Each structure stands twice: as C-alpha cells, then as structure tokens.
Image (tube, rainbow, N blue to C red):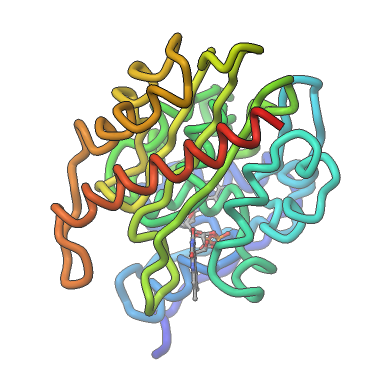
Amino acid sequence: MFPAEFDYQAPTSLNEAIKLLQGSDGAIKALAGGQSLLPLMKLRLASPSTLVDLREVPELRGIRSDGSGVIYGAMTTYFQAIDSPITQSKVPLVIQALRQVGDPQVRARGTIGGSLAHADPAGDLPAVALALNARMHAVGPNGERDIASRDFFTDMLTTALQPSELLSWVRFEATDTPRTGTAYVKHRHPASGYAVVGIAAVVVLDPNGVCQEARVGITGAGTHAARAMGVEQALTGQPFTQAVAEASTHAAEGLDLLSDYYASAEYRAHLTRTLTLRALHQAGQAAQR
Ligand SMILES: Cc1cc2nc3c(=O)[nH]c(=O)nc-3n(C[C@H](O)[C@H](O)[C@H](O)COP(=O)(O)OP(=O)(O)OC[C@H]3O[C@@H](n4cnc5c(N)ncnc54)[C@H](O)[C@@H]3O)c2cc1C
C-alpha cells in the first residue's frame, strides 16, 4: 500500500516548524517516529497534504530532571527514554510500560510526543502520563501553554492540542520518594500487541501501610485514557492491604467502554478491575521495599 502524494518539509527549529503548521486545519501534519501516522497514510485513512518532519528540531530533544520531575522532549524515542539513567532512577514506571510497547523497531522509532499526541485508545503511554500527573507543554502560533494530563486526552485519537500546536515536551512527576511504588500491567492483544487493557499505578504509603496517595491510569478499556478516580478515592487514607481489593472494584466506573470482536465491553470492564488489582498489588509491594 502506498500513501497519497504529499509535500515534505524538514524544519530545523521549533519556530520554523510552528510557522509551517500555522493555519493548518489538520491537512498539514507533524511527523515524529511515523509508527502510527505512516501506517494510517498507507491505508489511506489519513492523507495529509504536507508532512512536517520534526526530526531536525533540536528544541524537541533531550531528557532532564528538574528535581521533582523528569522532562522529556517530544522527539525522545522510547529506547532513549528506557536507556536513560534519569528515567531509571526517577520514573521507572516509564520503563515498565515502554518495554511492553510493540517491537524493537517501534521502540527505536516511536516517540514520547508522538504517542501522547496521537492518543491511541490502546496506547500504553497515555495511562502512564495520567498516573505520573504529567504536564504537557504545547507551542503554537499564539504562544505556549501547559495542559494537565487529565485535560489532555479528550476523546478517541483526540487531545486538547490545536491542529497548529505542537507538543514540545512533557513533564512526569518523579516517584523516587520514600515508600512509593509503581507498576504497569497490560493484557496484550494477541495479534497487535496493543493494550486491550493497560493499567499504570502509583502508590504512596505511610510507615504504617496506610495509603497516602494512589494514582491509576487506564488505557485500552475506553475511548480514551482516563484516571480511575473511584479507585483512588477508595484507597486514599485507608490501610492499603485491607482496602485494595474493594477499591479495585471501582476501576471501570465512568468509562465509555469499547467493544470489539476480541473483547466485549463487559470483558473489558472485568479486565480493568482485575488488572487494576494486580497493578496496585505490585505497586504496593514495591512501596513496602
Ligand atoms: C507494529 C506496531 C506495534 C505497535 N504497538 C504498540 C503498542 O503495543 N503500544 C503502543 O502504545 N503503541 C504501539 N504502537 C504505536 C507506536 O507507539 C507509535 O510510535 C506511537 O503511537 C506514535 O508515535 P510516533 O512518534 O511514531 O508518531 P507519528 O506516527 O509520527 O505521529 C502520530 C500522530 O501524532 C502527531 N504528532 C507527532 N508528534 C507530535 C508533536 N510533537 N506535537 C503534536 N503532534 C504530534 C502526528 O501528526 C500524528 O498525527 C505500535 C506501532 C506499530 C507500527
């Protein structure tokens, strides 16, 4: 399959990239790792008139810590994030999840910014972004703005970004604080490897095992990634070990559940509750080490 004809631009600065996207109603598209966009173009499900390749834009690169968080340039590839000592020490949840994305080729080319901006309902990183209280930094013709992860994923393949805005970096809250544990648990689709349901969990306990904070991001189950607010509320302030099973029963509440030949809405709801319990168990154990 071949894509429809398109123009190609390769800007060498963020300003230049923004200018090229200016006035775009979606016909001019940014190109990051191409792991989602190019298959869509080959299937003619997307036919942009112009691709703006972000590979040569230096402002979109780099990984750094600001103490309580880690900032990833949008063009950071999955492998770069996984291999970074900053990721390993500050936000191991990113590694726990990204190791489960696609195959080595996808992890070599796919980018953090591309995954978040694409907002695939079965993508792994959106759940992680929610559990790590991510802040997305958008740049467009009207300036810059920060978007909280909870406001970012608005619908299937849809985010709060405007068509002429670029995601320039994302900041994940660090979890290298005492008695904090994280886990990512995924039920892979047997054919595609995408998440039928994926759960990202962060748990903070006090010295007596009482849950001070729990953050749970869900992907795959619904039209877009979402926080499991009912679970988080049921756990916070409670003895973790005693409360976790009942709290997990709230995991599918409020989700706009997907249904397909592989997994009905009912099965997805079941998986969501079961994998939430599993992810919370793992995160709770890590918090007690
Ligand atoms: C075989 C295969 C298996 C896969 N398995 C998984 C999996 O298990 N889990 C998973 O999560 N994903 C999986 N993926 C998808 C992969 O993670 C993609 O890399 C990711 O979804 C998109 O990232 P990208 O950098 O390739 O973006 P691209 O494909 O280049 O772009 C995707 C979309 O985001 C937009 N975009 C890109 N960067 C920006 C930016 N900085 N600002 C604004 N808009 C931007 C583009 O315009 C486009 O609309 C798989 C892909 C393949 C081909």
